[in-house]
Image 1 (cartoon, helix red, strand yellow):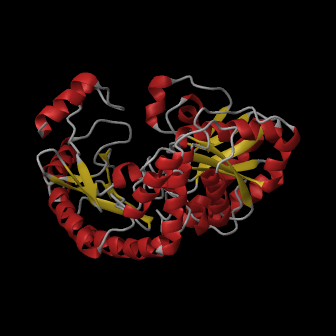
Image 2: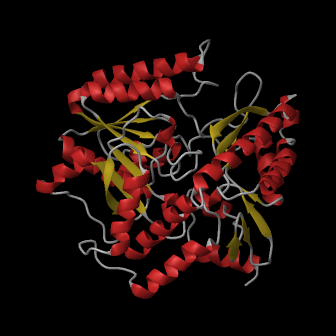
Image 3: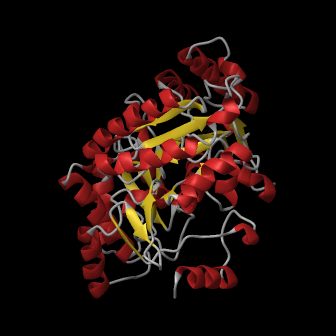
Length: 441
């Protein structure tokens, strides 16, 4: 099939997520290598978002593919009550690379059910019900995970589950909390409001705080150490668990193994992982807990289960991915490329009045487009405005595949990208953003 026929048949026979189906006009993909994928007619796309910010090792990593092939020949699947070598080895590797005393893993199929099970574990362990989360966060698309998120996609599916409490979070560019204040001063107030909310809700009823280790889907709005140090203090003061969602920010994305590694004083009790744990090649999620929590379930039933928990083929893919990252210093190389990307993005900002801010760390960066008075070009939770539609049209025409939503453009390519490939993407962004500049001037 050519690209037109392949796209047509996909539209006729399958449903696409997060869109009215008539608006879905997908590119096609028949093969991929490195930071590129190729359509059915041979058209080449630069993958500027690592698909869904999960293909961290790029497409077609031969070491990981070989591990998948070898495991498939031996054993693809057994039930979750049966022990396998890949499951044990991946548990060992996760204990090695995750921070502090996280030590034991419950495997899931993806990130959203990692969040679901983290909430269950926190409630079972503490005997408490409430979970405190943030607006401008995203934790997945199933019932509990979607309710926990502050992303506007939850609105059409509410009411969701009970006992979710949300707080406001960092946005130094536009939040009224930060007006006339430094970033640290604003972060301190956000932390104060968190503690006040906990007292309003009753700390004796709160099982956990659930935060992204590094903000992602909702705009890479990340508070700094002042906020995170207070979070740790608050959790200890009120005996509340800290669940960190590292589904997007994990495995080198922000220039460190995990987003929380930017804040060494923070000690998560539970960490949710997925996406890049297998560099996106096979679906897999994980909930990693401390010894203290794991020991609770030695004599108390863990009321959680999944048909594909500990899937042998998926775990073997995770093992190959992490071993490759360790052997080839992928986190360090990604951090180096992240610094180069940030330099190029800051240079873009100097040339384009439409760019209000560059945010992020490592290869987890975002371009924020806005007016001089601070207003975004396309408001949060609104359709794209005319300038953003023009920007998105150039990106599509030039085959730079990324997320251009609201007033932002995500810049999250694979960690294996080269400087030359970064410059290729920057040239396309330069052209696209020039379409928005006249609206500013």
